[in-house]
Image 1: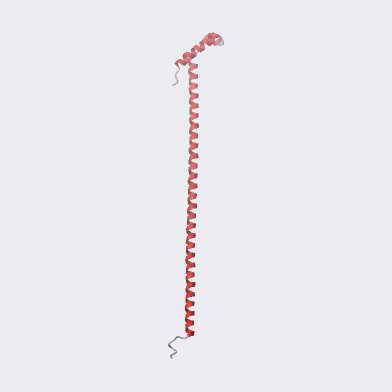
Image 2: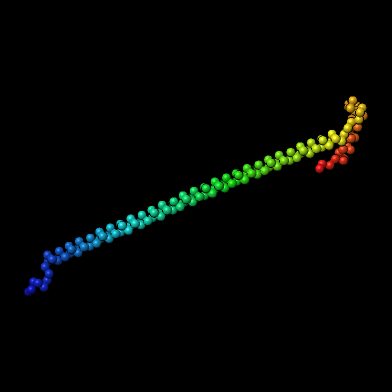
Length: 144
């Protein structure tokens, strides 16, 4: 029989060792590739989280800025309203004082006591004369 027809046993085990080494190296390469892909995915996820956090911080800053501007505008509007109200009150008081002053001046121009009342204004006749003149003045007076 020819011994060359069958491979030698020592080459058979060597071939199995080579195949096992190849499978082992391939498994290591696959594992490293998987670890690399996992690392890239983790890095990508972290980058996305960081971007989302930055966007949330920007949105919070913008919201706070808008709220602050809104508060400032409301406060300014309230101050303007308070100032307008105070100005209106001041004007109303000034106009009232002016009306009272015009009325007092008109009364002083209108009423001239009689000569006996210039001497003694505490008499009943002088008081009646004063009241009658005041009633006539009130009936006639119209503020301009």
